[in-house]
Length: 449
Image (cartoon, rainbow, N blue to C red; front, top):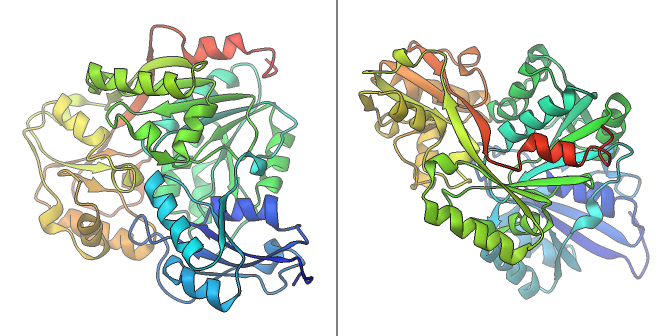
């Protein structure tokens, strides 16, 4: 370990993503700091980080100052770790939580005798190629459809790489992961949640990079591409310094844009704010988002947009008893009661939306217990084989004619169920100007087009 009277003993609070990036960029090579532990947040999605033996951030990534790696302990142990390891500072490094939650954790650290801080833009890496970042104020605003559309527009004239914010749910801790085809996802054994972020880009012909060491991810991505599209996770800040920063807001959750961390920071940093889902929102709620945005970021340009839901054959839905399966993160820690599947069921004339909650088993039943805001929809949870089995059994317990899958993946490739599955697609369609295309055109010189 680093030694010396001035060494700061540090704990990084995280959720297996931003915490590792903050460490790699800001702490790993700092001789004045010794990171004695990561804490992992309570599972935002039940099953996300399964209980079991203590996980360790591996020595090969932790650097010479941490030859045994760094333990990853439950967040509940924060106070005991501060006391037993003589911790000087606690760093908060995870996203999509309320401002109140952040300060609750700060209060714990301060009361236990440690300083508390949050890493800001100092963790952003500088790319050698232009970067367009797509982020949001909350999980579930529709980043995937916007990032995909931007990659399509840019791909008409340059080589594009999509870089995803990390989701290292297993123990592999791959420095760099590169996905070009669905077979790459199969070989990597990624979770349903990871597929939801990768698969739609691959289907559109875009290569996706992710991993744990985003310095190495950046090196490989910019070696292959003329432009990088950063497709941010949750409402996290971009890990690469953007040349153009697009941030999404959701008028179905008005006010959230100024109440969540680090979503409000994204709002204040945005060059463009895209207000999505306006076709499902009240005019007063759209106006609330606009007013909050202009108050925090007077120079931001606003793009108004709809989230348009389509299915291959709408006649298959009419008159059917439907189970609506939604994108997991959107309707769990994202706080939305439902998503694209329920909209499609209502839009295309389903006779009934069958409630899955009475038939839920195992970890899926615990999801419903934890997230009691959920409507009659089934989150597509699949952080482990055991949870996928629970999902399949829950579906088997539901008496329905048809499953509507409102996720960005082909759910039928992953689940063994007897009921037909219809995949729901949602795409962003701008209202008036500016549009994503006009935005790209107006910034063509600075992004190398």
